[in-house]
Image (cartoon, rainbow, N blue to C red; front, side, top):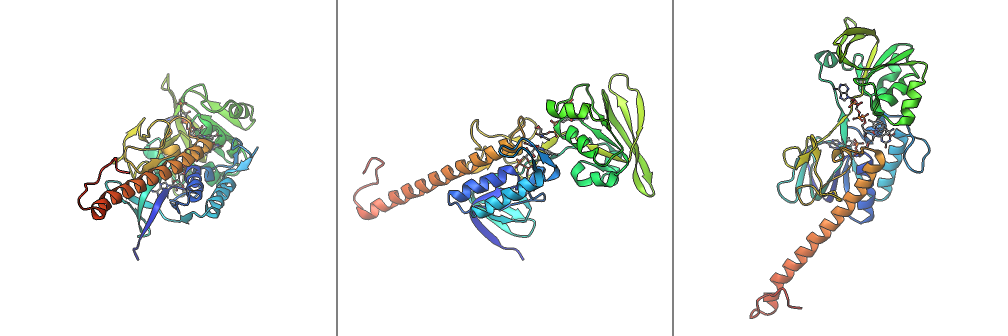
Length: 339
Ligand code: FAD
Ligand code: NAP
């Protein structure tokens, strides 16, 4: 059954940005509602150890996100398991439709929809998705016990995935298009000295090869970027870790974007091109894309929303005052300078 509910602040997304916004907006007595989306807890639920969250030398990503959710709830935020399928920011109140059939109306919206794994777009990658091709080692690594695995990419995600997969695999080959990794030095060192990991520089994935019956991956064909030479690597699993793209589907036609689809915000704030709509975290950040920076922006978004709503209320009071004056004294026009 469909229903409509109104909130002062609607937070869309349950990663570090969304939950931090929820803590701050709740403590500002804005009674926010947070819609979690398809991945409650966000990207950190797809990893294991997080070693750069201040205050925790090491914490499991999913545990950290459970704690953030509990924190937001304890502060008074209402957390809803729903997915927003459309968002209308043309007029106020803003209107969001939920997959559940619920319509959410809000005086201010905080967008914290984060980012999603990118794919190469190869037909063979698509054909074997879920049958040996994955973008989440923590989700699928367990299926490849004692098998050979290929990881594509050279950033933090690729290196972490390769390291994690050594827990299951007999061998992991990291295929990267350059001969230099983008990942942090500490991760690079761990990767390069790991006995189960081999690196293949200057190569890109050309094709995933496998069988149809039973459906599964048998190997990959990779191409040398300079010579064009093709070689084959036998493997049962292929993990694509070539970065993440902002999850901007709800607003890509209504808000200003930049840097290839990141929501544009005013410098030093979380204000988007539509007043009353704020954006935080990976959705708006093409540079840092960290849990701690996303959380920081979530805080900023809640404070920006609070200020916006207070200004709206001030305007309403002023307008009400302007209309009230003629009633008090019908002979006197309302004046801005009147005390
Ligand atoms: P996300 O975490 O991406 O969360 C987005 C949220 O939006 C999700 O809850 C999703 O369900 C929701 N959503 C999306 N669309 C909708 C919709 N239509 N309706 C409702 N909700 C929606 N960073 C670190 O600092 N340290 C690390 O060790 C680290 N490790 C990582 C390991 C991996 C494998 C990955 C992929 C990333 C890692 N990162 C790490 C990066 C970090 O996870 C991100 O920077 C951070 O999660 C971004 O937070 P966010 O809140 O912006 O969005
Ligand atoms: P990323 O940093 O953007 O790295 C993507 C990697 O994939 C790069 O090495 C890139 O190669 C390669 N690549 C991109 N497109 C490709 C293509 N079409 N074919 C072949 N290779 C391709 O992405 P990420 O590793 O997913 O990280 C995303 C963000 O999350 C980053 O800000 C990262 O710091 C953060 N993160 C942090 C941690 C941590 O703190 N421990 C862990 C995971 C993620 P080039 O190098 O040649 O461009």
